[in-house]
Structure formats: structure tokens, C-alpha cells
Image (tube, rainbow, N blue to C red):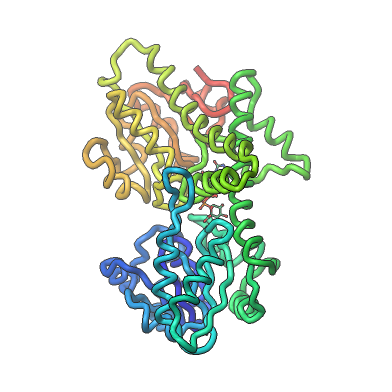
Length: 439
Ligand code: UGA
């Protein structure tokens, strides 16, 4: 089969590499010549474990091709996947301008006979119908098009494994030919098949992300209760999660969810509710609790330092972890950015360390902050350490060495990666999430 992807972000590039690896001929279309050049040379542009190897392997096997031109790719494709961004507008509504612009381009280059066009981008209910109208009104005579929604469920950082071993493949379409072709393409993937209509497939994706975000906000809300009552959030959530009806997966409290999906998709679903007359207050609370979670971390930090006699300008704060989650260089909606903004505003000196995301953060803050080359350099002479992303390398860091390097052994842990009793014994001040502070 020959397939095309429009867009080479985390979803487009990873899925393109995997389908090429299964033996298909795969085109990836982008609009930035410099990026397409790098991709052709085997540079994935983004950081995703295992992606560079998969990219190089399939480039060398001549199954994977990158281009800025639609004609050569679309005209020989059986299936075209739209994997462009759908960022939020100020209202929270998903911005679909890229989806509609590429749909018109695709339409112009459709060959005679049937092509399946499928949105993998997360789009509000009804979008694929609009895409279908655009395709039909711009396609050449003799070209036929069938539209399908085929949402993606991969996570950044584990994208390849998530795609290969997915729990389900969702295909929504009114066309039997489109469903059959997509089933054939997805055959090597594990997971149940959910075959449905366009609207249900579109809503499955939003519902999944909103449900996961709700679990996280719920866990964070319970961490606030724990901080007020002296209960321990880990024990509470373990005790609750042992009930098989509830479970404890994806309920880690911390510093709030970030990234390019949950914040955007919860807001978009709220917007769909508000505009279609459905009560969106539950999801509005999920969104609000997420903001409060970030503020709670920063407030604990500022409350601690307000009690200190010396001024902020004399204090150096180390930040470990900049990406919105481990194993990615993505800093979109990352909690680290809210924290750094606040630290700089309050006059602190900031030293950060992240094994993948520093270059992206440098584009925002330039030389306003210091970029350490390892976790120990970051904490050298620091008045406090803030742990924002739970990269593995922090979990068994040499705490004795950290204590000896820091001016004051104070840790604010937004991800609960250490045990309070261990840090207490070592003489740290340790303020984590939903657990009694070690003061
Ligand atoms: C999310 C979904 O998990 C994927 O299924 C979906 O395909 C993807 O969005 C998408 O729509 O494209 P992703 O945003 O890459 O994936 O990463 P997650 O692992 O879901 O983490 C999202 C955020 O939630 C991170 O900031 C993470 O730190 C936070 N999180 C996650 C928690 O705070 N607690 C948890 O228990 C789990």
C-alpha cells in the first residue's frame, strides 16, 4: 500500500515510520523545506526514544519519503492521513485552519479512482464531514474520496510502543471501502477494533483524553485535601486504587498535566459543550483544578521563601526537568515554564537541567537563566531545588552529593520521586505533593 501523511509532528512522524516499517511505501509531506531536508537526512527533529533508528532504517530501505510537494505523494496514495496541529484558539475552540487548508491541497492532487482520507489529528465532532465537503468540492473529475476518522492514542515518550501495542484501533466512517482499507493497513497492530461512525470516532478521542485528564485532576484535588488534613496522598490513592472498579493507573498527583493534548482537548470539549448546550461544568472543574495544582506548587515555594530573612535576588533556585513529561523534549504547556516565569518575576537566579528539553527552553529564556550540563551542576550553591519532571536519572541521584553541593538542602518535589522519611534522615527540608512536609 502507498500512504501519505500531512504533517511530521509526534503523531505523523511516528506513525509514518511504523507503517513504512511494515513494508508500505510512505510519503510525509511538510511545508518547511529546512525541516524536510533534515528528515531526509535521518534527523527526526523531535526527541522520541527509538524514532531516529526507525527513521534511518526506513529511509535506507527506500520505503519512507519526505517532500514539500503534494502532487507526487497524493497522486499515488491509497490512504492519506491528516496529522497537522489543532492548537487552541483564545476561546478554547480547536483551530482547524491547518486541517482545512491541507484538505484543499490534498483534493487538488487526488488521482482517478478511490482515495481514503483520514484525520488522525484530534478534531471536534463534525470536522471530518467538513473535510469531506472540501475534498469533494476541490477534487478533479474522476477522483473519488472516502473520509474516515482514525484517531491516534500514542503518548509522547512511549510513542512507538504505544502505536505497536495499542489497546484499540478506532475507525469511523460511512464508507465500507474506507473501513476495509484501514483495517487492512492496521492489521499488524495489536488491540481490539472499534468500527463506528465518524462522529463517534471523533468523540472517542476527546472522551479518552478528557477522562485521563479528569483522573489526574481528581488525584491532584485529593492531594489538596491531604495537605489540609495531614493525610498521605500516596497511601490514600493506593487504598482507593486497590478497588478494581477504580484502579490506580494514571492517577499520579503532582504539578498538573501539560503537553499539547490534555490542556487543549479538555478546553476544546468544554467549548463543544458550551456551544452545543451540554453542561461543561465537570470539565471546567478539571481544567481549573489543573491550574490550581500548578499554583499550589508555586505558592508552597513562595510561602517558604517569604519567611526567609535574605532577599530573593540573592537566591539561586535549581530546576530539574523542563519537558512536560519525561522522555520527550516537548515543552508545550510544561509546568516548568510557569515556574521559571514566576521565579524570574520574583527576582531569583535560576539554574535548570534537562537531558532533552534545554535547547527548546533556551529559545524562550535565552541567557536569562543558566543551563547546567548535569543535575549536580544545576544544584551547585543553590538555595533550593525544584523537581518538575520525573526523568529516571533523578530518581536515584546521589542525594548526599546534592546536599553537600547546595547552599541549603531544600527540595520542592512536584512529582513525589523521593520518600519523605529518607530525606528527613538525611537532613533535607523536603516539600512534596499531598504528603506531610519535612521541615
Ligand atoms: C496524551 C494521551 O495519554 C494519549 O493517549 C494521546 O494519544 C495523546 O495525549 C494525544 O492526544 O495525542 P501525552 O500528552 O503525550 O498523551 O502524555 P501523557 O503521558 O498522557 O501525559 C500528559 C500529562 O499528564 C503530562 O504532563 C504528565 O506529566 C501528566 N500526568 C500523567 C500526570 O500528571 N499524572 C499521571 O498520572 C499521568
